[in-house]
Image (cartoon, rainbow, N blue to C red; front, side, top):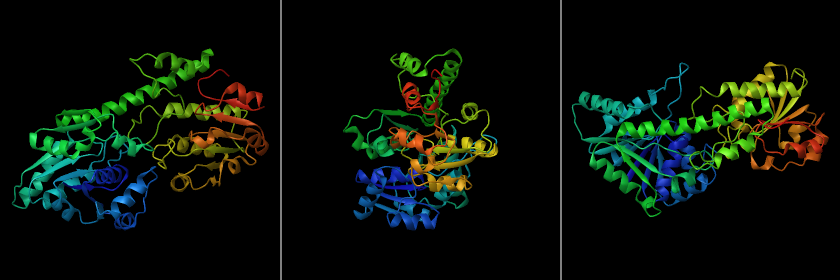
Length: 415
């Protein structure tokens, strides 16, 4: 089976590489000629553990290839995935310009039956609009080739995307005709061997499933952050509260970790700002009421570990607020500093976590990379001007840090 993936960003590249790993012939199309040239050389523009090896292997085996000729890629494929970016506009709506442009190009290129699959995160009803855009272009060209539309939302976690694709919790396929369902089930046939659950439904239900999942997970994070704020007021420990409710099988323990809020490209944005403001207040407070004139060491810049993605990362708001207060910032992240430098050009980027601590008035842990979980605390203490650590991910034990001589604060645990 020949598959075309339009858009070689995070979702498109992971999807294309993993289908190629299944033995499918995959052609990834992207309008960015420099990106395509780099991908053809095996150079990966994103950080995702395991992805580079899969791309290199399938390029070598000629199951995976890249092109800027979208029309030719569409004509060669039976299944065409739309995996372009759908950014949020300033007013909170979703920008579908790229989806529309791709759909219209498909309409002009289509020459026989295709299954057109929306992989991008899009508002409910977008797949039907894709059908309309394709039909309009076909009508303008005086042709009428049969095609199906489907929705196949992605549930890839950055930093664990390869495993999520190869061993998913479920595969959701939304389509309104038997031909499309049969073809997509055949495409995902390798997952039947590991008994992956398949949800076969209509197009709007599939589109809504993606939003429902993101909203529910965002709700759990926001809820435990509210519990953390309450714990700080009454002397509770949010770890105990999270464990107490997480052991209830109706609730579950995942996504019950208090912190500065969530980031990335998908989770809702309307619940993030207040929690980040509280984190900034926490830093101000431990710096004797003001960060003005202070130097702050920040460990972790990406929105979560195992990714270089800076989209809506809590570090952006926290660092910008520190700079606005007159502080200077020294930062380190294992992989995200090149991306962070485009957003935060005026801070100092360090070669490791210990260099970041040199002559800083406080250390703030923002992203819980594994290498930050066992810091040499005596070394950190000797490098800081004063032994102050603000742990926004609750990585360390408060009592142990205080015994080590640190002024320590965390999220939702007794002060």
